[in-house]
Amino acid sequence: MSKAKEFIIPNVVLTELLEAVTGKRKSLSFEVKGFSMFPFVCNGDIVTVSPFSNTIKVGQVVIFTHPRSQALTLHRVVGKKGNNYIIKGDNALEIDAAVSRQNILGYVSGLERKGRSITLGLGKERCLIVFLSRTRILPLFFRLTKLVLYPARELFRKRLL
Image (tube, rainbow, N blue to C red; front, side, top):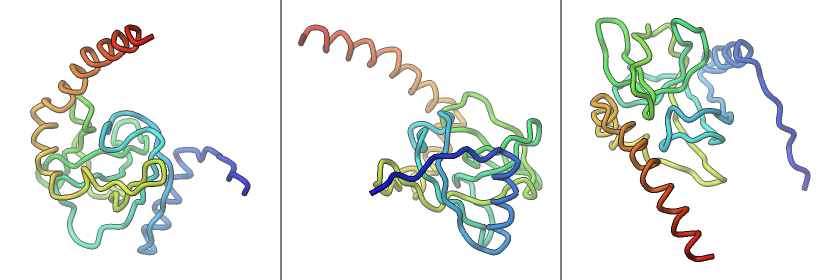
């Protein structure tokens, strides 16, 4: 069995591809890179992005073109202000920006990690995640965990050797 070759699609091309696919009411799956949505979406996960059938809901993970950088970004909707959506990475301290509906290309309808389907962070618990993210508890908790647990784990490993 041959392994598929990996290739990188430039940001502009992936944006155009997503617009074309979701414009035809179809879904597209691809591997994501980055850590801003950790631990709910991790570097190397496969996401399936689908077009919206109704309205965009607070708590949904969406893919959008960032209004300042024009970079394709996958983050969570944490609020709505007027006609714009407030979007933030789960592991980010700051809100991205107010994003217009025209910049949002679709939502994450599926997530796969190491061949297994992942639903945590995409279901009803997403409202709790929004609260923890907006109050900065979630990203601070991840940073504290990294500062405390990783050194403790290394110390424990060294004692076992």
